[in-house]
Length: 201
Image 1 (cartoon, rainbow, N blue to C red):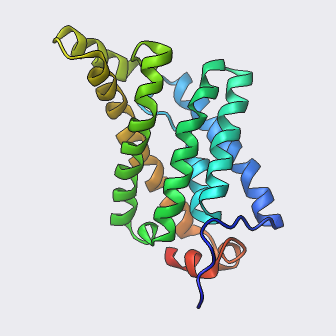
Image 2 (image 1 turned 135 degrees about the vertical axis):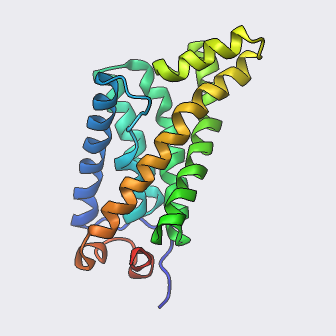
């Protein structure tokens, strides 16, 4: 079967329902993690789910909209990190297209890759807007320890992000993998291409 274009966004009813639902999942996940002071963000489950189901464009849209809404309603600086969530959506969409989300090992590897991408995008933003901190108490504690140990601020900020982002993205991709495995074939076939969706089986 001929593969569909990975960058094509199929604007059918299923996708139009998926995008706002995924934004809501992201929003609630971030609020949940923030209220409980978890060492995770949990703000990209919807982004990754949309990217896996409907491709990188859908994932990027969800990531951008999520951070803009969260920035307007809860934390204004969150809007800047739309760049991170956009990158996450694009990378997950590409990885899913290449079949990495079809088995547990691939989901774990995807989590690691996406975590490193998030670190690479977010660390410079942390330096510009927060002096290197992330706002997560667990990561920021590590940041302070690294600075006290003589580590340069940029490196300490990267450690801060790694401590939070790698476990977070591995957990998120595992959740998304399990959701994908549990979805009926009839639903999965509504999205970008049967060839890509069937890779979840």
